Structures are given as C-alpha cells and as structure tokens.
Amino acid sequence: LKIENGDAYALGFHLLSAFPYVVTDLGTGASEADIATARARDQVPEWIRLYEGKRVALTGFMMPLQFENGVCRKFVMMRDTNTCCYGATPNMNDYVVVEMKGKGITPIADVPVELVGTFRIEEKFEGGYQVSLFVMDGEKFLGAKKAGAGGGR
Image (cartoon, rainbow, N blue to C red; front, top):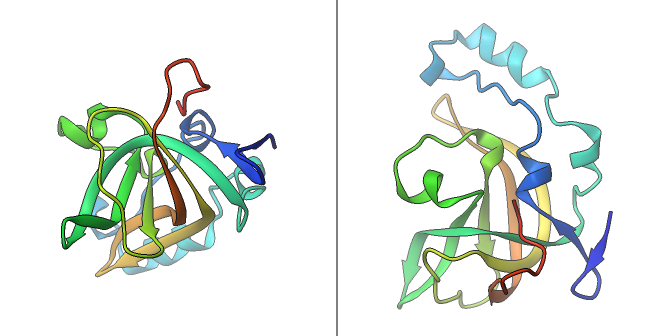
C-alpha cells in the first residue's frame, strides 16, 4: 500500500480490474440457488481486501448518477471512457459507485479525475441483479488529474 495525498492510500483500476470477477444474477439466467452459491464464494483477492475501510485516493472517469441543484452527490468512477461513454458493458470491478459527503460536486467529463474517500467492498444486489462490487464514501474531490501524475489505470 502506497500513501498518497496525506493519509490516503493510492488506489487505481490497475489493481481493481486486475482479477476475473464472474457475475451470477438473474441477468445471467442463474437460479436463486445458483445466486446463493455464488454470493457465498469470495471472488475478491486479498490484495484488494487490504483497502477495505481505508481512506484512498482514486483516479478514474466520472459518470454522474444523481443531480441536486446543479451538483452531483452520487456518481460512478469508471476505469476508462469506453465503459462510461461508449456503451461497452463494464466488468463489475471496472467501476466504483461513489456517494459524496456534503453538498456534492460539479462533475467533470471526459478527463480522469481524482477523489479521496473511504473504500468498501460491497456486493450489492437489487431485485436479483448485481449493481455494485466496490463503493466509496467520497470526502474530498481533487478535480482533474494532472498528466503524468500516476494515473488510475
């Protein structure tokens, strides 16, 4: 684990996306028994679990999900623009669902952005469909990532 931005660990999609993750839910034609068996199987490697509950600095591409008064409180940080903007179906470990604390932020499109917050592994299902694997409580939005400053891929 490498410390960056004060007391936050540097975390990027080069780590988050570096393992195979198989979704088993109603969308894949699985039965309730298959889903229960799959949920009991831990697919997340220990080297990702090291970040569980820790304050991290994450870089990725932002896709807003929820606006209030011109600011965004809930968004997805994506590995790249192919998954956020061009319709390719992302792998479950190619994105992190973020909820910002406070009033929210002004979204920035098409460039990598960086934020600091608490990272959690949360295999969340809604109506039999998996909707998240990784989540983050956003604390501080650092804006556009400077070129050559490490990257999140």
